[in-house]
Length: 251
Length: 349
Image 1 (tube, chains in turn cyan, brown):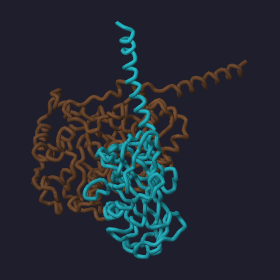
Image 2 (cartoon, each protein chain N blue to C red):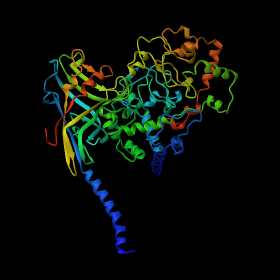
Image 3 (cartoon, chains in turn orange, cyan):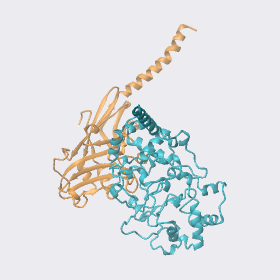
C-alpha cells in the first residue's frame, strides 16, 4: 500500500465528515427573528390609558392582550416548507414575549410565513405541560379542557357586563366551535436567506381587526365572550389581524 | 442524685419519642413492587398508559402527599382526600353534593376514584379530556378548593419538604404544575379496583349464590348496555330520565358540547363499589341503592328520559330487584378500600 493510498484512506472520510460539520454549522447560524407589534388601527397599543374606537365608533380602553402562536412555518420557493413545532404565548404586558427567534433556518429563497393562531388539537389533548402551555399562564379552561387562544380585555361605558368590562376569551379546538385559525402572510418579494444571516420580520397585530370583519362587534350586545358561544365569530375576526410591516428593514 | 436520674430519664424519653416519630411507619412505605402496574386480566387496554409519566415510588409518594395535603386549597382547610375518602372508594360518603372550603356547596355529587386510566373523559359532563389535568378543576373551582394553580405552585416552592420530595421524584427541586399534576396522576392512576367477589367469580375463584347468579343474569339483560362489564360503564353520556332538579337545573353534557341534544345527559358512572358510594346520581338525590333500583324498576314512569336504553328496561319485578341488589353488592372490593398504598399516612393506621 502506497503512502498516497493511506493518506486517502485517512483524509477522504475526514474531509467528507468535515464538510458535513461545516454545512450544518452554516445553516445553524441562520436566524429568523419575528417581532410582533401590537396596534389598534394605526396607533401603537397602549394598555390602560388610551381611548380607542371600534368600527361602530364605540369608545373603549384595553387592559389585557395575549394570544398563542404555534407551528410557525416558512415556505421556500421550491415548495419546501420548514416547520417549527413550538408554542408561543405573546403577551402585551411581557415585551420579551413579543420577540421570537427561530434558529437553524436552512439556506434558501423564502416567499411566505404561516402560523397557527391558537393551540392545535394535539396539544389540547396532551395533559399536563410546561413552558408556554403551562396552565399556570391563565390561558387554560379547567372545566371544559382547552387552551384559551386569545384574551382581549378592557372596559367600555357601553358594556352591559359588571364594571363595564369587555372580556373576550376565545378558544376551543372542537367542532363546531373550533377557534384554531391559520394565517399565511406572503412576502412582497422573495427573501433570500444565505449563510450566517440574521433575518428579521416585523408583524403588525391589529386589535381593531378582532372587533370587525366579518363580524362587527357591538359592545352593547356582545361585551363578553368567555365560552363557545360566539367564540368562532371572533376567531374569524382575528384570523386576519396580522400583516407584515417590515422584512430585514425593508418596508 | 434523684434529680439527675430524672433529667437523664427525661432526655432519654425525648430521644425515643422523636426517634419514633421521625422514623416512617413501614406500613406506608412504598416499594418498587408497590407501584408496578398490573393490568386486570379481564380489562381492556387502558387509555392512560403512563408512557410519558414513568411511575416511580418517589413520584407516587409525592402524589399521595399532595392528595392528602390541604395546602392545595385556598385556606389550607381541605385536601383531595377530604372529599375522596378511601373507605367510600374515594367518593364522599353520605354527601349529596360536593363540599368546598368555608362550607361552600357545589352542584354535583363527588364521583368515586377508581380505574381512572380506563376513562377517556372526566367529570359528570365529561368536560375534562385528560387524567393529568383533571386535578386542576377541583383545585381552582370557586365552590371547592378555590385556589389558583399559580398560588399552589408558589406555596409548594416555599416548602422545604416539598422541594425535597420533588427532587426525589424528578431529580429537580423546582416545582412546576406539570410535575405536580403528573405525580398526582401516578397516585390516582394506580387506584385500580378489580378484586371484588364479581371479579373472583369471573376468574373462577369463587362461586356465586343462587340469588347473586340470578342478579347477574338480570343485570346482563337490563343494565349492561350502559353499565358495561368489566368496567361497569361504557363511558358514554346518557339521560336516564330523572326529573329535572329545578334548583340546580344542571344541563350536564350540553354545557360542554353546546349541543341541545345533550341536555340533561351525564356520564354513565361505574357500578364498581357501588355499595359504598352513596348517595347516588349526579346530584346525589337517591340516598341508598333501594331508591336507585326502585327508580330503574319502572321506566314507564320516567317523564323526560331521552335514552332508548332506558325505555328498553321496561318493568322489573320486586323479586328481580332484590336479586339485582344482591348482585350489586358483589362489586364491592374490600382489598381496594383497605389498600395501604392509598391510605392517608398523616392519619396513621
